Length: 259
Image (cartoon, rainbow, N blue to C red):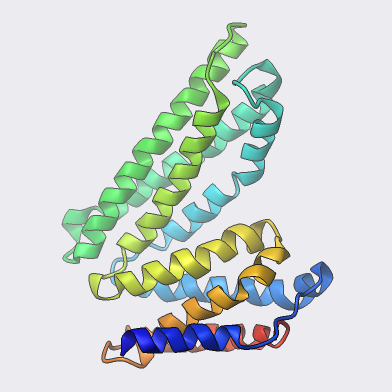
């Protein structure tokens, strides 16, 4: 029966003749509403017991590294060297701030202070993320020291950028880990199939074409979360119903531009 419902949802989102928005129409009519949806989602998940609000700020800080990483990728595609020193030092400074904020988060969400298994699992992933940040920052510290000493660091750029991308993914997993087990799979699917793609491709990069191509699958993911939390025996988490309704209404207001 569940498969039939999912199939019906998927078919219904593809049954219309889809229109494509122009960049200008997206900027004026769609992007502000998407920002509202992202804000509503993060407000909603912070209602879970022991969910640390600081994770949202950390995710924004990691996303803000995107232009710096792109500069490093284009200016020093092979290995870290003198011509990239300003970018390297900018990146290591940002990572130092993220390291400090992560340590404070870890201390605040120490597992022994909570009775919730979700907080215990989330704190473990926070610790792993912190270790990763320290490792990458150490590489950049070493590279900057050697460059200032006029010694080639011989550190390849690609592995550093790859580790930073993996850290962003790990931090996303941290958010999901703090969701109680009963709701975790629902929120995992919605986060990685709706929230994170919008945040990466639309909110930060203003890639309006992403929504043109993926509006059907995004619509399916949102309808699935709404169905799982409101139309089944699973009780909607306390305080989340208004946020869920607002997200759904905001999204429905956008569909008129696409169908």
